[in-house]
Image (cartoon, one colour):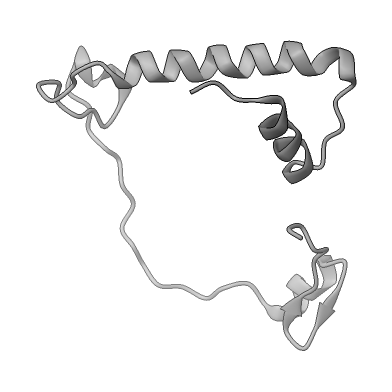
Length: 99
């Protein structure tokens, strides 16, 4: 189902964007083309395709180089506070992002 101008307006609001009226149709067409492409890809039957851990795993065996998980001291609170723009009672103070 294609995206409508009302839905695009809602996306603008959520993303705190303001598209010029002249660009809204173009952006709407581009988003709808993208969603159509995703629908086409989603329709492909991939049940017989093995999962990959790495893109080159199709061509050669990939060995993951994982480090041993060793507990260690974290950063000192004072050094974290020194780099933070605002810090109250051991909490970072950040601007509100979501309404």
